[in-house]
Amino acid sequence: THIPLIRHVASFNRPVYIATGLAGKDDIGRAVGVVREVSNAEIVLFQCTSIYPAPHSSLNLNVIRSMSEEYRLRVGFSDHSLGSFAACLSVAAGASIIEKHLTIDNNRIGYDHKISMIPGDFSQMVKQIRTVEEMMGKEEKVIDQHIQEAREQMLRCIVASCNIQAGETLTYENLAIKRP
Image 1 (cartoon, one colour):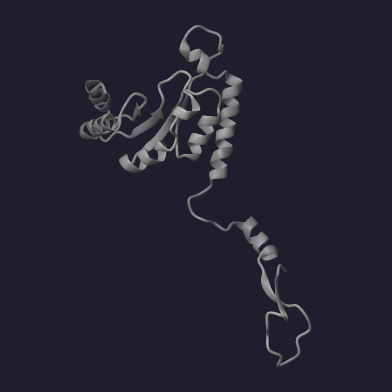
Image 2: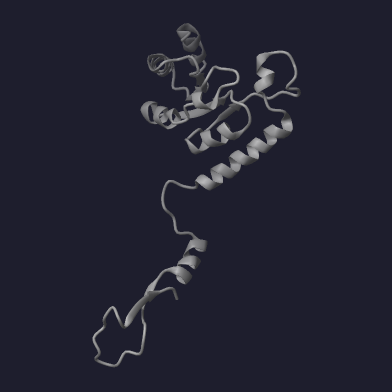
């Protein structure tokens, strides 16, 4: 909502990352419009809930895809929830960048440390996100080599269910559908 700052940052013509934690739809549209007016900089919006820690019910991950479609921009997720579950789900919801707080000690003073991950957990989260990305696959239905091999073994075909004499009429009774 700090339009002079957004205008100044956009003037560098470098990527502009905008957290939307306290912003309404009008605020987001205004910020995106200012950046587009000032430069050709890449803009990335971040779905964010500015509560520490953010309850699961407040994360609104579905807005990631809708913001991406509405503004035609990449959308990330600024995760203030505990653990890695929400970050992984945000990737499935369309997030292309994750912002997660990191600390060396969750017991340090300050609200960020309580919601932050220690390095080992952070590393595990990155592995989980890479697995989610792999699982999400492509947006088109693809028959790869493994599926093609399975198709050859499992797709059903019409076979005789008994001996059929030459000239005999094919019927439901003398035909069956089976896997090869």
